[in-house]
Amino acid sequence: QVQVVESGGGLVQPGGSLRLSCAASGIKFSIYAMSWYRRAPGKERELVARLISGRRAEYADSVKGRFTISGDNAENTVYLQMNSLKPEDTAAYYCNAQTAIAGIDYWGQGTQVTVSS
Image (cartoon, rainbow, N blue to C red):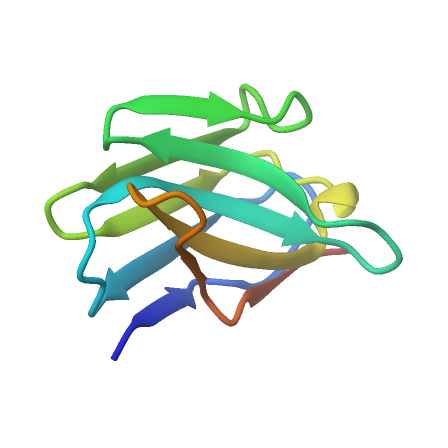
């Protein structure tokens, strides 16, 4: 059974930090990339950060310099360290595990991040 489980969301004040974690298990194909997406109320889902083959990181312009993605390719885990959080970072954050097979990827249930004073 495939599981993609996120954790680490919560309520934080502007300027604060949070660390999200994601673990994928039960996936029989090799994983090409693990990513974090987010969806804010009334907005479309957007890519926040992607870690390709456990080495190459890509970021949305809105989070560059504030967020850091890392992970363990062998363990199929990925983390998102979020610093200097802003109210506009408030969203549900989703982990995605993209396999090496085109069109096969898996999503977690999401974890809520709320940045508010």
